Length: 217
Length: 217
DNA sequence: CCCGAACCGTAACGTACGGTACGGCAAGTG
DNA sequence: CACTTGCCGTACCGTACGTTACGGTTCGGG
Image 1: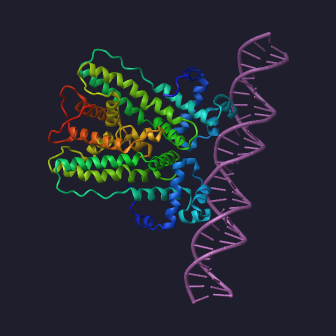
Image 2: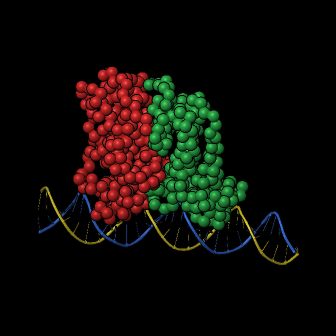
């Protein structure tokens, strides 16, 4: 919500710089306290001088890493095609499953942790960046689908934002906070698909225009 | 989920020690990086030596602070009384509103931030403590109410845990992560009451045994 | 072949902060 | 009054880490 003026700079990463940022991600997953400039230099086989030349300072390195990871998570927008109930349901399920997969990945958890930490420490705006590429990015991608569903007479709501937030809550529930706080929660692909299906079903129960079967357990 | 063996020690806090922990909370709200042992000593007008004598080390101080705050958030359990639909709805709404008030408070946000940070840094288990006193505590307090609602024929579900997690998601949605990541989100009491009412209504739409009015906007 | 640019590896600097030691003071106890 | 206890204030120590500086190496261009 804040950037978009640096998309060129964001793409102006040499392959070597990408390697460095991947090293940062590795270290981050191994534990936030493992991320010292020395460790990065060692892991990436580069000199600290280079790190500072390329990324300015530690915060710049972290910011670049967050953008780097965000740039590869971005998936294509869902084209609004002919929508029947089944296609809509499937699209929503795919959204939900994809979102669950992202937030339960070790990289996402690690990245969100450092962003939360830095938000608490005032310096830098990693939080906004993560929000913009996470919560808000998915919202902007999902809302067109919801609106298409409404135009097709499949969904019913006044406020697409509110509808999206409900969907977000039905899908994510307590998962993200539990992972951030370190609970060893493992989501298998089967779990994810099941949760996505249930959340989608519940969403239809709340916002579906036609009556869909409601599963109450 | 881990403790309960130190409840005596937790209560064995002198008033003076409580003052110190309040100072920690103050500093935490002002920013996680403001929390140095020196700063605590200065703010609480005590010596560092005393801090170390009372709390062992920095982590001990943080742990004690989390427990201290948790001990005052704990509200009384809801007695299962004669439940009609209206009483159940009101209880759920109160739960939801209370939960929203807690997670949107500056203290809770600050405390969750440090817990997330420390979880990332491996040391100590602040994360488990926060989870135990937050997410899990409210779950254990709410599930009896849900089960009472089921026994009274007002709710329908197989798994109380799953039902609770849905309720949790409907209430919290994206609020906690947005706050943790630093979005300046302000929830007025009116917002909270409105959100709690909507979430409760949606919960009834999904799990209500009798048919309740469904608001779809 | 020579030069400069880019980069690696490492050593060094400055500082912030967790943790400790010590001197002083006030209060309770015999 | 002598003595102990508990605490405040402050100075101090050790260390970890961000940041900078510098010598050595590789590589492309003239």
